[in-house]
Length: 263
Image 1 (cartoon, rainbow, N blue to C red):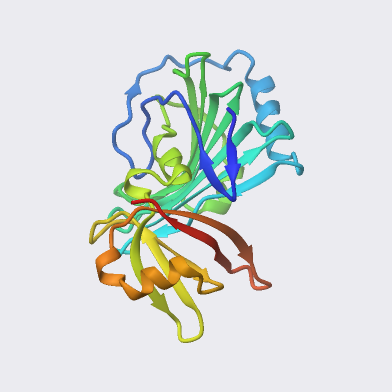
Image 2 (cartoon, rainbow, N blue to C red):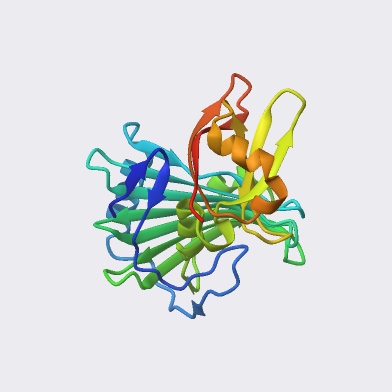
């Protein structure tokens, strides 16, 4: 998968497959016969480990989103030296279900070949932490799934994986986050302030949609136009360029570099 980066704006093309995730109920499950080991499982696990241990990957952060209810969403793409995507993470918390966690996708030659879900499933009678790994064929159809569960997340590595029902995990929502599309689009939603810093608010143009805030570093002509006509400009599509910074305490800040009004 090739990603073109323009100041952390990401434009991706991908062949989507249906999937389920802890906060997306449109997946498919199928019974699968128990087998002692999946063919080439060790080689596939080594391939995943090589990606995870590669310290030279370029990290591309999406905007961090939240909604009024308190749910959050964000994603990260990892690119190799040829600027091809080899891994993507989606981080989420769903205030409605109480579920939260991370979905990781492993990419080769532009196609998903494995996914890993690590999340807290609060919708069960007895809530548990789940780690689920699925492998996909050349058409990105799930062909093998294994999972393990534990009462506490730190106990997951101690548990043995068990063969599970086939479970697809979709990249669709992750791609929307990275591409700032649909429910994660960047329309103007006003300004906010903490008393010392002015923040530009962008997100889906609905009352309960996901939004993101970016610290304004300078008052250029576009920021002045948005400020002077704040109410009238609500809902205008924006193209933003930004940086993501982390302070000494580990807190993440989104710094606005530039903004363009598209409509």
